[in-house]
Length: 234
Image (cartoon, rainbow, N blue to C red; front, side, top):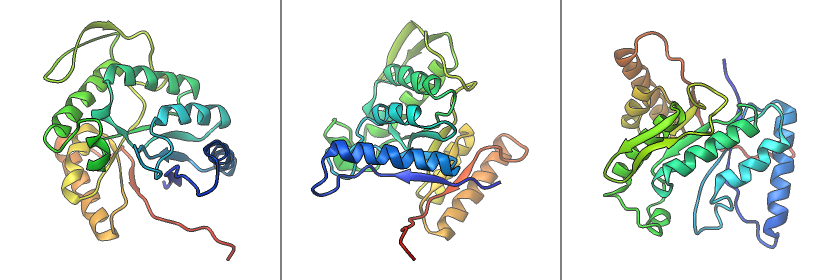
């Protein structure tokens, strides 16, 4: 089965007030919903006009109210920039507000320049990301969160909110190289690639091989491919 979705950069338009850009995009997303598009994913960027949604959760809370069937989420939450406890609470809110339509991506942050403004670099991004991801999974599937790590520590924190979907909302991971597919396969995470076809095929092959080796049986996660499309009059 093939689903069609939209991956969006909420970029600034020259001469257009940001308020109008937000409203125009929300109207467009409502049209996606009415047309039967399955998924809407939004990029997170910082300190650049490429992304007017540096806090994806804020914009997506409006998406939850403007749509009925569309699944949506960030692609991705840049985990090293978040306190994972706070992010767990936001994820639960968005999943509840949408009736279980929230699906979120996770990543380290694609631009080293953007994350550097927050003190994140190539040396600490990976370890912080892995700890934050583990905290997310624990908090979304437990009544009480306890975690002790190098970057995050939580001791018996009540998880008051909870997601609609169990054990947690679907998670996505962007794959840029074939070697990047093994980890999400080991975690049973959905993946998407915007690489050329031969690279994307190598990545999905590795994903299937890792899945078979570690989990057995057919792949139940979604394997996605992103392509740029220009909609014109002809």
